[in-house]
Every structure is written in C-alpha cells, then in structure tokens.
Amino acid sequence: MSQSQHILTAVAWPYANGPRHIGHVSGFGVPSDVFSRYQRMAGNKVLMVSGTDEHGTPIQVQADKEGVSARELADRYNRVIAEDLTALGLSYDLFTRTTTLNHYAVVQEIFKGLYDNGYVFPRTTMGAISPSTGRTLPDRYIEGTCPICGYDGARGDQCDDCGNQLDPVDLINPKSRINGETPKFVETEHFMLDLPAFADALGSYLQAKQGEWRPNVLKFALNLLGDLQPRAISRDLDWGVPIPLDGWRDRHDKRLYVWFDAVIGYLSASVEWARRSGDPDAWRQWWQNPDAQGYYFMGKDNIVFHAEIWPAILLGYNGEGARDGKPGSLGRLGLPSEVVSSEFLTMEGRKFSSSRQVVIYVRDFLSRYDADALRYYIAVAGPESQDTDFTWNDFVNRNNGELVAAWGNLVNRSISMAAKNFGAVPQVGDLTDADRALLASSKAAFAPVGAELARSRFKNAASQALDVVRDANRYLAEQEPWKLKGDPARQQSILHVALQVVDDVKTMLTPFLPTSSNKIYGMLGGEGVWTGMPEIREVGEEGGRDYPIITGDYAGAARWEHRPIAPGTPLAPPSPLFPKLDPKVVDDELARMGGG
Ligand SMILES: [Zn+2]
Image (cartoon, rainbow, N blue to C red):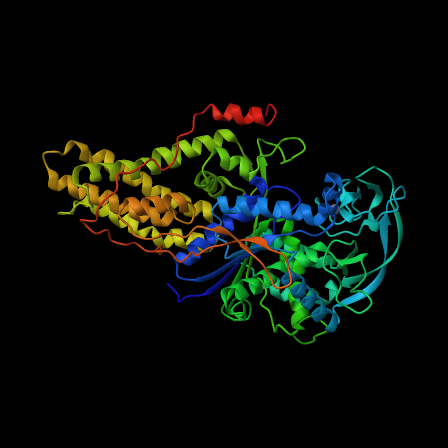
C-alpha cells in the first residue's frame, strides 16, 4: 500500500427546497460514503465535506407558495436533510450549509480573485420579467425550444436533452412555466464568467484525465468545450450572496447566482471544518498539497458544474486562464482529480416525481427498512454506470437473498455454533486442503476488492466480497460441522476457519454496511468502535446564527487488512443482522405509490 494520502471527498450539495428521495442519495450520497470509508480504512486522510444548497429562485418560489420566508424554508429543510443523511450513516467530516457567514466570505473572496484577474466582467443582458406581475422570472421557470438541439422542453438555464447551458433570451417560443405567459425581456446588468478564456487550460486539464475518469463523464465534459460562452454569475434576486464590489454590495436586487455560490461550498466547507478542528489552516492540506487528491461525487445532471465550470473558476482564481493573473489571497487551489458521476435512478420504470407520488423519501424509507439494506441496494444495483430502475421487488429479493440468506446466515450460524459449543473463538488444528483454499481466497480478496473501491467501482467490489461469502457457505455445507460432535478438534478447526472468513468479509463489507459490521465486530469480541458513525451537533459562528452540522469521529479500529482472529476470544451470542422482508411489502409499497 502506498503511503498515506490526503483525499478530499467533495459531495454534491443537496438543494434545500424539500426532503431528498432515494434517487438523490443514490447519486451523491451512498457512493461518496462507501468511497470515503474505504479510503480511511486504507490509511488515507479523508476530508469529506458538503452541505445544503440554500439560495436561488426555486427556494424563493417554494417559500412564497408556503407563505414563509426563504430563510425559514431553508432552515426547515437543512435540518430535515441533515437528519436523513445522518440516519443513512454518511460519514461527513462536515456537512454544513450555504447560508453561513463563512460561506459568504469565501464566495466573495473567490469572486474578487476572478474579478481582479479579469475573468469576471459586467455586461448588460436581457432579463425576463413576468408581464402580469412585473417580477423577475427565474431562468428555470422559463421553458421553450432549445436553440442548439431543437428539444422543445428546454429550460431557460439548461437543456436537459443536449446538456448545454442556455440563456432564456435564446429560447425559441419562451413560455413561463408558472402561468404560461410569454415573458418580457428587459435590459439588466450582470457579471459574467469568461468561460472562453479557459478553453485551452480546460482542454489540457481534461485531456490528462483520459483513462482515469469514467468514460461517459469525460466525453460529456470534452463535448462542452466546443461551445464555451461567457456565463452570467449574478441574478436579479434578493436571496443569495451579495456582490462584493462598491456600488453593488448594498443593492438588494442583485445577488450572485446560486450555482456559482454552491460550487464554492466545497472550499468554504473545508475552511469551516479547519476552523472547527482548531487549526484554521488545516484545509490547505487538501487543497494546496500537490499530492492531495480531490474526488467529486454527483448525479450526471451536475457534470457541467464540476467538470467544466468549477475547474474554470479555480483556474481563474489561480490566474491560470488565457489572461494569466495571480492567485488570490487564499493561494493557489487544486482542481478536481476526478469527477465521479452517477447516472439516473428511476422508480418502478418512471422518473421520480413528488407531485405524481413516484417517490420515496429517505426518511420514509428508513422508517420501514434499515440503512444498511438501502446502502447495499444502491451500491450493488444503483445507477453506477447506466440509468437503473429501482423496483421494490428487486429490493426485497436482494435483501432476502444476498443480505439475509447469504451473508447474514453465514455470520449467524458460524458465530452461534461456536458460541454455543465453545463460548469463544475455537482453536485451529491441522488444516485440510479445503480449509486452506477458503482461507487463501478470503485473504486474497482484500487487494482486488480494495482496488475496485478506490476506483469507485462499487458493484464489482461488492460482488467479489459476496463471492467469498458463497464459497464459505458452500464450505460449511460440505464440512457439516454440526455433525461432528464426536470429533471436537475437527469441529473447532472448521468453525475457526468460518469465523476467520466472517471477520475478513465483515472488514471488506464495512464501507457498504457500517452498522451491521460494527455489530459483527462486537460479536467477535472486538473492543471499542470498529467504524465511526456520523452525528448531528448544534454549532454557531461569530456574529451569525446557530445551525446543525453533521460531523463525527471516524477513526475507529477498522483497517483494510486481513487480521488473524485469536483463539480464546469470548464470543457474544449473535442477534439477527438483517430483518427478512415479507414479499407482501412489495404490494404495500406499490399501493403507497398510488397503484404502481
Ligand atoms: Zn438542447
């Protein structure tokens, strides 16, 4: 194993206009946590950061609808989302929010750095207003035909069909999605990010990622380079980060665009984490150390922001675009090493939709099923490299077949037989060929499973660990230790071998199944914490408001290595790890969805 590395796990920021559903957490949440837990076990120094994305027009629109302020709405869903992600066991070092004073200060610093280097400039553009109300009509509430590909459901900010960033004034036949009227376009002044000035630098950056990134992500990002346009980074809106320039700072009708402030969250959250850790400069180890690696996790609708716009912002702040310049006061910042994007999850053949009840929120899911069951399903059957359909039937089958019948059963019968007959990890005598073969294949699985996890290939990693489980179940069926009452020495050896494999596989499945792995660690006589779990803490900031964060102590005993079990270690009688699900929950869940 190479020596310890600094690894930034930058997890996409969930938008705080409502609770998140399992499609969301299958894109950014579970993959980033499995990856981070593996990296910590492998001895690397992980900083996993994110938070709720709380500015922008959708929050304002939702707040208006509910008759509350944007801040009240953001407060409510920040807490709901933080609680849900904690319940799912996601091991954020810091999960914060974009409405902190710290975030505002870091965003404004990045803006100023770009501005001073000449990569941000003012421009008079055409902004949409609603003729009937006179209010600004947000980009994404305008719909029309895409001027690039001709798709007729393009939004004002982006075409979901060709993936291009759009300006609403360019849409053919624009219509308000709120009331169907044709918007009126009036002159308004905004700041633009000069994306064309980064074409060469982005091209070199992306070309160097050939063979490293998932091919679909790289291809998408390279395609975007062909048509880079200056992109507005401010909006006519009063809910967001103020523009930090004289004459703009105090204007209530102009704010930085929500996507611009949200991507800077990875940096601001790292800075906040460092301050809370007691060493305000500690973030620099993940952002300025040439050996550090930054992995960004998201769903594919966010590739453009992480593979194109965020690298451009960092290049501009560093003074590394076509106009050169020098780094701002924070110093030179590192670009993403890898953009790990998931594809989309659908549900029972349909797109997730809250309004049409094609949805299951994380909270509702976890009120009826275990977090490990959901984590496992997302890892082995989620949208890792292609769009994937969640079905209740598949969820129940995998839970009952893979977690309960294969893995849970191996753990349960090995530990209960050894605990009942010997009360402790039994001695091992002379090994047979079958013993040696199973022990060797279990020990040998650490390297390939770890290599798959390091490359975010979660399905392959889980399936190789499950192969060891199947080998072990076959071994027990052949050796039949329950029939060897008359040969206690041989019975002890078989159970010793089985427990060793249980211990190995428990280690290999820890990134996927932290809660049940902690239980197995305890049953096998382990002391202290195996792998740390996240918790919510209430914090404040100087001059600001109090808010909840997710954080935790993830040190634990877990290491990515085979560890020989010690004969004589007392065993705790096992309790079932994974509840078996009644197949009729499929009908219950489909009924909840309104008939399926
Ligand atoms: Zn298009």
